[in-house]
Image 1 (cartoon, helix red, strand yellow):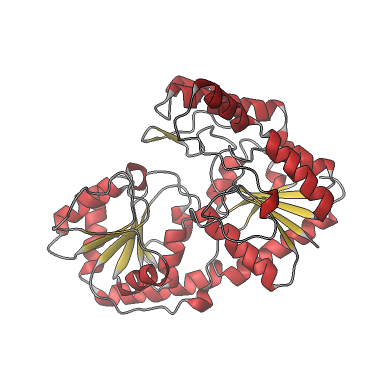
Image 2 (cartoon, helix red, strand yellow):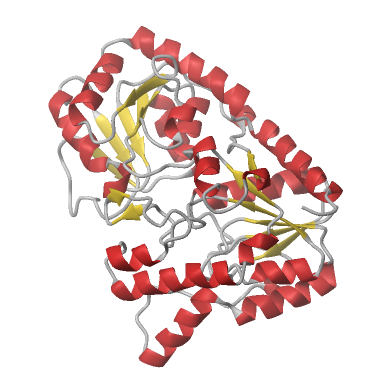
Length: 402
């Protein structure tokens, strides 16, 4: 069994790449041959297949009219990706292709090429691109399901990205791949949450969807049930992540517990910040792990449809209770009153009450932290995740026609 792994970024850009490289390492550690296909970038990790990667494409840099037109067309259909993948398939002859994020730089146009070579295809749904041209289910800062996997013109009507040109292009892209039936070639879709599975079923048959939750290497994380008395948020500093609600909540109770914030984004304060909360900027690796381990609890106040939050999983692995929003996939992860608390999206007063309860009761924090660790070992261990991925590959190989 040889697996072709496809993702447009070949470095740790976000949660999708974390899962991508976790699975890649798992396969290699189990002596399963792996072939890589991605986009060239100076940040990329080393790959023996980098010569087959497509040229770097950055859609944010301003260019001339003709160049923008070319890039807009390649956003929908990448001739280079099709050509280079065809050559790679001739050379490597993989049995299965596992697709992660392929939109825009690689494009779903690669799916028919894989089918032409008789390769079985599985695709992990890290976002909502199947049903939402803008992939985030957000109309500006409002959660939105208007397109519902079919009415893609509504992305143009709503101008949900704040740029009419981008909204038109994304709508055309979605219609193009529906007309081409690009996604029909995918044999199985992996949904990291039941919520994602429900959303995906607006576009693809339920029989093609399997729920396989994200995982964490619990053996490499030693839980810490003691703490240094501060609340923690780590992630992107943006409106849809609920940061403004968190700041409003903390302002009500700042005398009871300090708040530390890790990450960068548009809501990052400019210049020196001397007051509460404490903005620590971008942290990663052991530095971030130490900050999580010393925290009292973690807050995930998202105001967007989280799929399977890695922040929740990582916090639970460290034995921390989590306070999260009662939307999308988060209630699947947090057992309200047992491993943490849920609160209604945008309700700053309710969030401050939940934070106060944990801030004032260390025994509760420790009890919930132990329950969190038990839950992550049971439901989110990467060994279990890897075993499910292998079982799914075996299911694919047994398929004659799906």
